[in-house]
Image: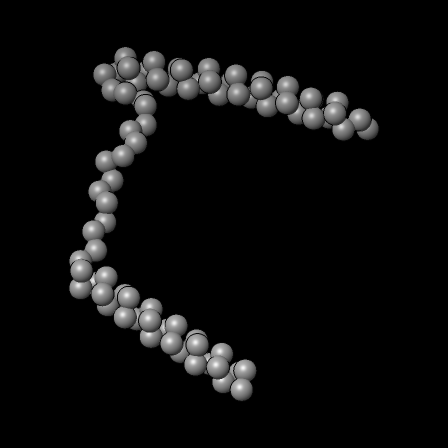
Length: 79
């Protein structure tokens, strides 16, 4: 089987599926518009999480403690 021919066949199949999906999407958008809404996705609106200075300091302290333990075990393994 010719690999290039198989790839082109797959490309045509996917293009056909894409056309069908675009047609369906435009139908859904038209229906939403007729009902007075918008079918477009709204990106954003998610609030950014804020970490307090104390919380950050606690995380840093815990990380340093974990790394100290790792270094201690590595030092033991070398000796």
